[in-house]
Image (cartoon, rainbow over all chains, first blue to last red; front, side, top):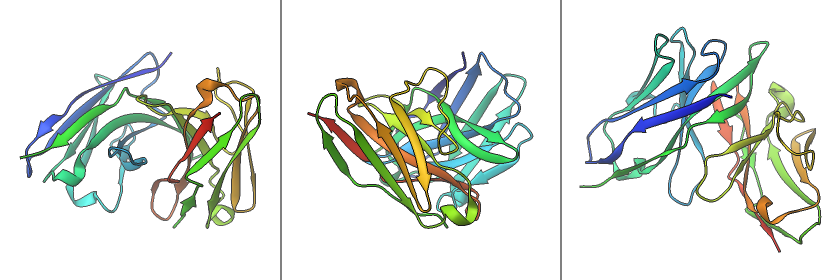
Length: 121
Length: 110
């Protein structure tokens, strides 16, 4: 039974950097793609980016200049840093595991519990 | 770039059948497959189906997915009160190199 447990975030001031970490328990860390997503209050899901265990990343072009996702294979953890935060970045942030089959992404099958992040002066 | 369109809301009665749709403008080109997520209020999303019509372990057979051309569908039979939730379709966009989501459909079970 794979579990993703995430922490970090909270209340940030404008221009600060968000840092979140997600730990993976009970399953393999390799062979998957590890994503961060977010959901503003009352709105839909937005994908932020992903990394595989080799550190190869893909980012949402709208956030690419501010995002960094890294992995720590020794701890089965991956992390998100999002810089220059503004009120528009206020959201619940989720980590998730992406499945792949023959090189194609097929679904996000395990999710963290979500972390609310508020940006306010 | 794939764009996914979902109706904002669907209402159906208890024990009825609901069919939620997701229209994409690039499914037939990239053939990446569509997955569906259920999100109950205050909870993280849960994967219901992937690669068009595969159910993860533990997902009820009441949920079935299909795709025809540019339209993917999620059919829920025998609606129960716990099915009331937001449902999102998603697909991997090869040109964007990322996941794209529909805006979500709020299902109300009357």
